[in-house]
Structure formats: C-alpha cells, structure tokens
Image 1 (cartoon, rainbow, N blue to C red):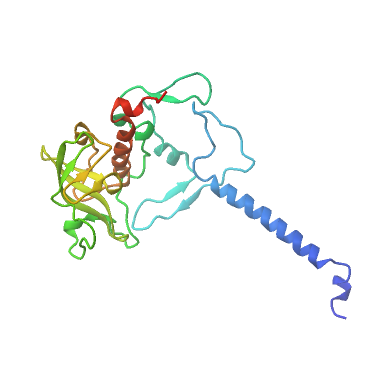
Image 2: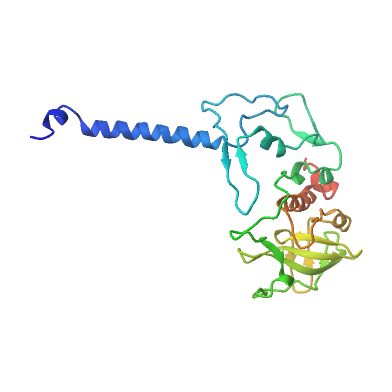
Length: 256
C-alpha cells in the first residue's frame, strides 16, 4: 500500500504532540521577547541592573506612525531616555533597598508620588482619521448634551466650600462621544480644565473634592487654545490625583 513503508513504524500521534509542544515553546519565547520591547533591561532604584532575564531583549523594530507623525524605534536607548524623568525631588527614607521615597519639595508641583506623571508625547491624541480627538463642545455643532445636567454656567465649588469659578465649556472625546473635561473660568479670569472623573455635577453646582481654592491656580494649562496634548493630560490629571493625597497635611498623615 502507498505510504506503508514510511508511516508503518512512525507514531503520527507522537509526532503531532511533539510538533505542538515545539510550536508552543516557540510561541512563549516570542511573546515574552516582544513583552520586553519597552522598559527593558530592568533597573533598580539607583539605575543599576535589576537582574537578568531568561529571554533576550528583542532587536530594534521601527513602527511606522500614521498621520505624518515620526516613526518610533523600539527598543531604543534614545526612546528610553526621552521617556525618563531625571532629578526627581525624592529622597529614600532608608539605605535599605526597596525603602519608600519621600518628597523633598512640593510634591504636586514636582510631580512625584500620587502626583506623578509620565513624559508622554507632547502632541494631541488623534482619531483614526487624523483629527484631534478631544475638542470643545462649543466648536461641535453636531454635539449636544442628551442626558443629565448641562454643567455650563454652573459655579464650581472647592473642597473647602469656596467658589473657584464657573463652568464655561465642555471638552468632548469626539469618537468616543463622551465628556472628558469641564473648562472652568476662574474668578481671576483664567481658565483651567477639570477631569470629568474628578468632579461631581449637581443641579446647581459642580463639586471638586480633591482641590482647595488655592490649588485651582496651579492646575497645569494647555499651551494651545482648544487643544490638549497627551503630556498635558498627564499633568492635569496628576494634579488632581496629587491633591487627593497632598491637598492638606491631614490627608497624607498616617492613621496610627
């Protein structure tokens, strides 16, 4: 019979299972290697090597970015350096490895601890068509508030029960069709953004529980009118998160 001479003494089931295990092992090695494309090799708190990996660091790969933005090479020493923050205002509480760090200055201004931010790209986020995703509602004639309270015109109250300003506009994530920020005009005439997740809209006012009145002036601002970059979003949200812990001494004190 055809094939008897070759397959007669070969266990095809055994061959199949061994091919599967070889493929599966190769898949694990590939996935783990790709997983090390960013942030590797690992470093300890002092910037030294944090050990070794059983898997090699992958070779550099160039990612072609859409909409005319610069290509990204990963892994790349230049890329790692561009996303690294130096001279953080922190001091280790002990010489023991793994000891916590404490701020040495104003943690909200310095962007450390709960107020930490990552050095993301200083460009606006784009949708699939190359348009800026987050835009003012006043510039979107096809958008309207369909449910809940329209916060425009409502006063903004701080954690210390003082009026910080009035909501003057809404910033919308256009493709996601959701509110991302409220724009508030402060009592001194300046404007700042409030992340929608860090405030509560009520029928007669908007409450910001993390900030006291004195903190509103320090909220990082967008450098371009009507746009906010990924880096600026990081800094704005970090300001509110930092105030949740560092807003008053009582918030950051230990409970025992």
